[in-house]
Length: 68
Image 1 (cartoon, helix red, strand yellow):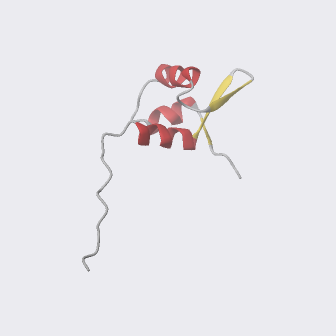
Image 2: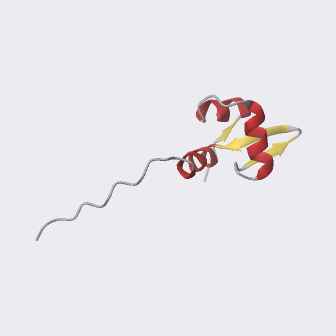
Image 3: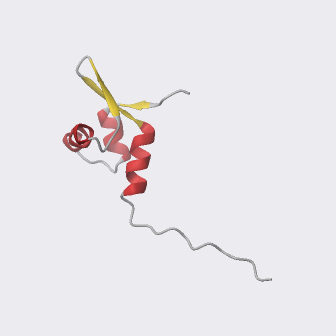
């Protein structure tokens, strides 16, 4: 399994252009998964998608049932 990594700037862009500072804050609080390698933070792309899903105000569509 290959993990896609994002820079802080890329993650910020995917979250609608939030600040780099917010990405660092979310990373340090554990709300975004990532790694710090030689002082450089990388964020897992799947973590950004999960964060967006968890904080979305969209409700799931009700299941459509077939009439019998």
